[in-house]
Image (cartoon, rainbow over all chains, first blue to last red):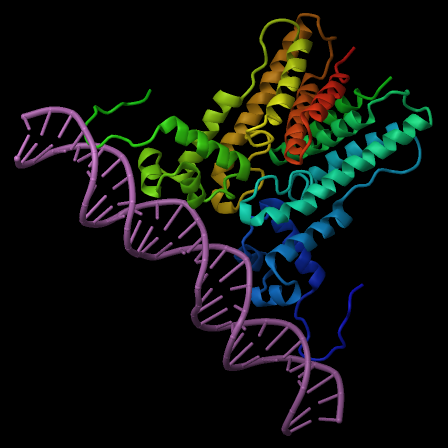
Length: 197
Length: 197
DNA sequence: TCAATTCTGTAGTGGTCGCTAAATAATGTG
DNA sequence: CACATTATTTAGCGACCACTACAGAATTGA
């Protein structure tokens, strides 16, 4: 994947992963437009040309940080066991992650890039696609549950998937607004009551 | 409330309400940071000095547009009848409003100002307070329902209020991502299954 | 008609935006 | 050592940011 150039020339003076982590937190907390390159300089301790040399542009930096977020802080539906348990764990895990101390509140994907200037429209496509994939993943899990008899035939799996997706997105909003971990867990519990009987 | 100055001097050449409506739509669609004063000039047909003369600053313009949104496009819980019906209608009305053709998708309050640069932190306070008041309104309605016996004693009204609030917020995200009115209504239907029995 | 008042359009202000050319520093290779 | 290569630093690019001084235009009151 990564073409590592032979070690000619002056070596990097920084750890690329640590820098990307700081960049991720800045974008996570302040969004794309709310994070300036000057902000990133302050967050990383690097100067602009180092950032640009290592990553390319502010937009690439954002997308790279977003992928890192997805792989480091993202959650996946457990593929085994009852779908009900998988969804339930998914919601509780989101509640915990959105209120993790030492990290920005909320989710870098669920509520990202919802309103941008026209010039930055393209930045929103990747986060939107990630949200769409989350919905599709939930729905697939629910469809399987219907096929296996865990959920009744005729269950509106699309609507149910959108509901649990909305719960995640709403938890992100409320975490940003200061909701505690306990409150988010209670929300998750209340949401699971919507599971069909 | 409004101190109307006697009609001395050159009169306004524009309708203040129509201009504020255009401003509201711009902020609604592109957010605070995503909307520049140049954008507002294009949206209103006015020049900056007219906007500043009539309203004061970009931030005041945003807050004024936000209040207008709340009073023109906001929804309130119907205070009479069963709480279950009031919440249900609230969700369906949100589904319809977030997918109203001719208006930006989503909600100008539910998913507003979630990530801003540090310099603009103060802009987020009013939208956050509006969301908090919505949650409080829902919870109050649920508390009354418990007191009147519509909901069982011991119902976690706080968690249930947060759930319905999250559904609204998630519907706003999904509307922005392109969900149809029908899909949002289905989401609302699925959410009502969480109502305690 | 003249003066007072208020609004509009022109033409900027200083500041920040994302980004980069050019000089310098630090490494490996010969 | 010299040289090629790559990274960092300095300094600043043009474009846009929110905002405004100022002059002219349009109105009312005297």
